[in-house]
Image 1 (cartoon, rainbow, N blue to C red):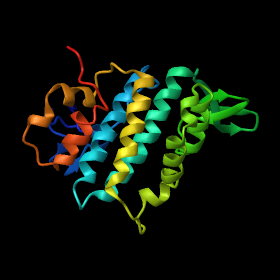
Image 2: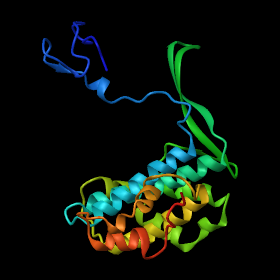
Image 3: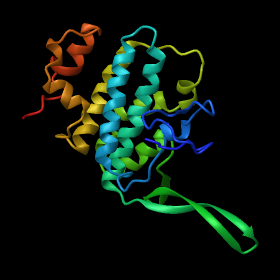
Image 4: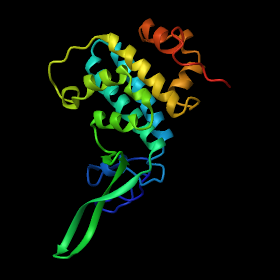
Length: 231
């Protein structure tokens, strides 16, 4: 919470992000990234991947949100691949940009996280899931499976998914996504406590939810893709 307005420096209600005197919101205080040593923790990335996966399933069965579902699917693929990479590779920080005061002297620099594999360099911030898959293949041949190649080919064009365009979406696409998540999640950390394990262990199939029965049936129990977490 903030005690003083960043514009007029008058005291404000610490439970709000708005100054009545300035008539301004403290937007930069509402959302900001804090530096953390956990930024490259593969478990946190896997938990984030699970969140996107569940969001994809929930969106897909809402007929007005099918396009949003494809965005979450792409993010699911990208984030799970990055989680696997973070588990098995060393992260290096590469200097990318330097700000110069005058010739020969610089005052600041920006660094990007990179991975080195097979005489190649990969920036972790990339959205190029083909490159991410190529990196994963160096650690496990399971990523050479046709499922991975075909999924990456379908979701590689990030701009098509992210921006308005004509896009045909069949709800059956969620089933290879199921297989992808099951496989990679088990490679990363099969006993991880995430939204998937929480939903399954909570007996979601018996709960009243405003979701299609197919969501409950195929995702959580009947197809046995994910075993309920043992307490």
